[in-house]
Length: 288
Image 1 (cartoon, rainbow, N blue to C red):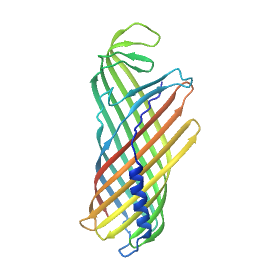
Image 2: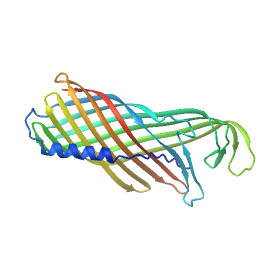
Image 3: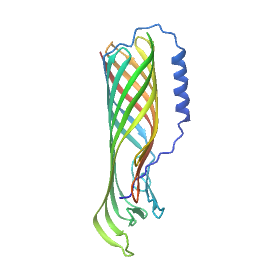
Image 4: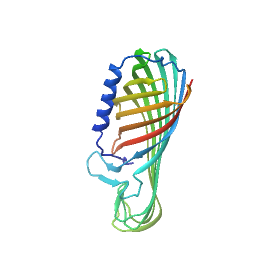
């Protein structure tokens, strides 16, 4: 089945500049506060994410190269709310293990205003279309703190970003099926694409304690790999700040920029998934 290709075009230079400025600040800071010594940490929250995405259907011989805009053609909202949960365990003074779970779900219902192509079939303008895009993300990460002082912790990380994605489309209306020149009414037209991809990640992290209540964190991760018939690339940046009302409870906010691209090279078609977003997050922190 043809692949689905999602893209997000945005300028993340500003966020990269913020990250490196904070990273340099962390490196040059002087240690004056208590150690980072929590054993367990749990973050639960939500984010407001800005998407601009498209589906691309393409083949090896370039005979098929079609594009559908999620927002303009299928009626997906640009702003999406996403929940997440992240837990970490400090196994030793310099060793941590982290697990993030984040479900992403987008749905739409629309009466189409133009023809578009799905799986080499043409769905005519005026058809009812219901579409959904669902992704479950499991992000497992090991962090080693190579530099640790009372108020400053710098680390390197390695992990797996595991993505399970399913795109589905249902339509009712006039359709020109592959190999035919005649329109026919279909009330049950369906198409879907699933992509499961575990991708490795390497990263850098920095945490700085401004005072016993106020912390800031910076994180950058990247990897580009080809294994067998799967190609993958991930780039992510995040800036976080947290204020602890007690020694165990805090509120946090973060700015995240994320770009993932996964391609499965099939015999006939490329199954490709790419999406890019910027998001603001608010979350609750529990640690002990």
